[in-house]
Amino acid sequence: MIGISTFVPAAMVDLCWLKGEPQRTTFTAENGSKRQFCKTCGSSLTCQSASSDDSLEIALAILDSSHSFEDKHPQPDAHVHISSKVEWFEINDSLPQYRNVRE
Image (tube, rainbow, N blue to C red; front, side, top):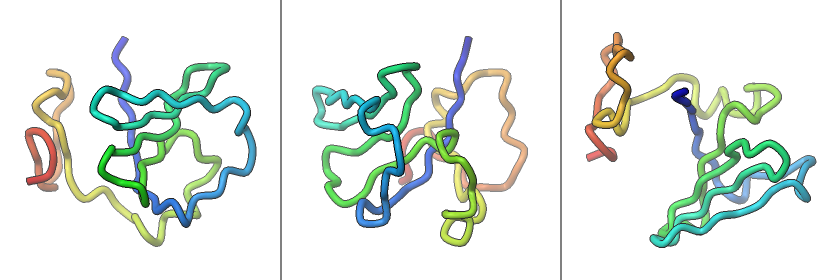
């Protein structure tokens, strides 16, 4: 099974957890990046670069609705990490493509 996920950037000052804090757990990788997961189901919640204390990325699927970020992020603006995309997925738009991170 292959999972595909979409994350949206958020400033820490704009983030307010409404519920579920006791179910969140954090894993810190060797490079210092942090990922939060749900202790109950294992769902990915957030990821934060080791070099960023003021922002993180939120897994889009955990939001109850999209109205809170539509004005700031109305459309996708690029495809990143396409060097590791699955063979069967075809990118059929004109958005910029980056083999790894944005260059």
